[in-house]
Image (cartoon, rainbow, N blue to C red; front, side, top):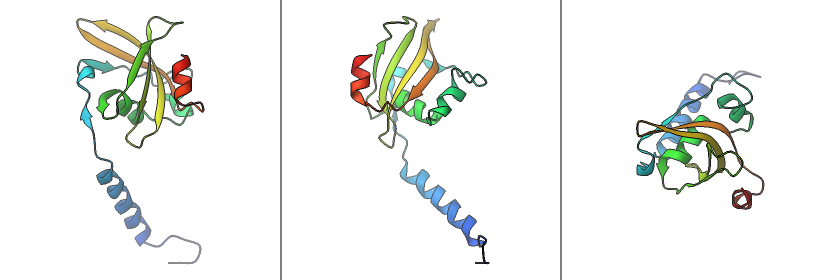
Length: 131
């Protein structure tokens, strides 16, 4: 390897490790309870949606894992403060427990979820139980 720089094999190592991670990160079965659900993402608003969620170090993929895959099991309940929102508590493929808040509505028997915020609460499940 040249002094102070990366060698040509470093890119190959990174590619191999990325492929290995994808192989080991096996997709789960679809959650049948979410079969008619469509995600609506707000992309360009730092107050809600994808940009806001990214500030909490949560990815769109993690939210989709929590909501659309089994196992693990996801729990859901309506917000007390905002009746048009549903609160979700579930784990990602890497067993990271995420709290997700979505606007929730149905049109023509299709359920729509618009993620507002998502984060990994310091209090864990206790946070979920108090909401």
